[in-house]
Image (cartoon, rainbow, N blue to C red; front, side):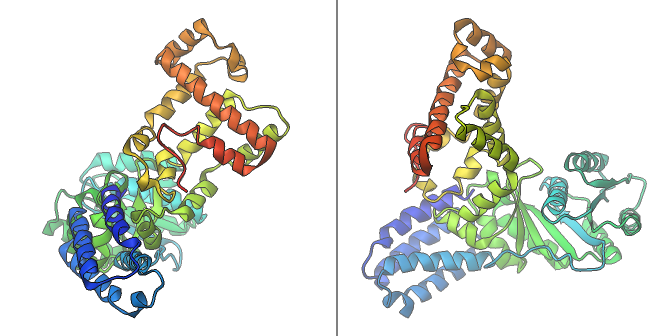
Length: 455
């Protein structure tokens, strides 16, 4: 996420960070580079102009001149203006009304709207303990109704049935009436998408909005369309009173133009980011944390929240107890750790939030970006007998051959896994003997070649 923009800005700002004195000339040169970085990231031109003007005015003002470290102060100003451009703070959903709170989802076809309905339902159920009902008013695509029904089952929320013979207003009002009788807290209404903005679609969705009067009207838009995402959101906002935006497919967008343009063009906040295909891959949008990530400073708060919500604490406590008692760390434990990491979005999702990750060599990052590696490792461990998992030292030639065949991989991959497991086992022994410092030092050996923990 934002890799290209982060790389360009980091390089540009590095040149000015050590300056003892800022002049109009070196500020001008730096801002020219910042401007190019933003334009290459597909940030809308009006947003770029306003951003550059604000940074220039502040950089030439008293707060920089009086600073002991003008270069660092300049970076602080850039960070502050990035936050301002994206909306300063997270704006949560407003569900403060007589239940059920109605949330209407709008957007173009292919933007990930139906998946976002399921993700949002899961988020409200798990994080806010809400009883959620979902319903599809997309009568043009029977597959969309079936897709939402399947996703509702996956995330454990109730699905209100509908079919293509019904009118969208009748579907939505029927679901809301049902929700009132069954004491649901929230009803999320999925609406029909189109391949482009058209008057017929707008007329239908305006009528639906007037009939159900949702407290939240969220526009779902694909981040990979860059500033076009902001322009599409603007078109919808002129027809509907949007309350916020869900920016999807952010994990596939290395530029970041949409995130920086939407607030300025629509005046509406981004409330959530869709960061993957899985139903748990939805993050509340925090402008301050995103600005910090763009500038290579990491996002430790989001990482802590991610660990807090996804780690199985009972399992972690049992493992810690087992290690403290000197009972060792076996391949079953190793597989459990891989599964925990997968639950948190994979290694890259975690590393992306650590400070200084943008300074790592590309070949080091390339080795952790492939989720297939984790799946292969899991398959290899699942192909072993309980005895082999408990005593890896017995895994020799013929056993390796059998395990590789069972996992559909090669003996080389089995050897690689056993080597990584041995390194992890050594690290766990050091944890028993004493302290986090030893563990952090030993974790250097766990990283791919060329990768070190940022200092």
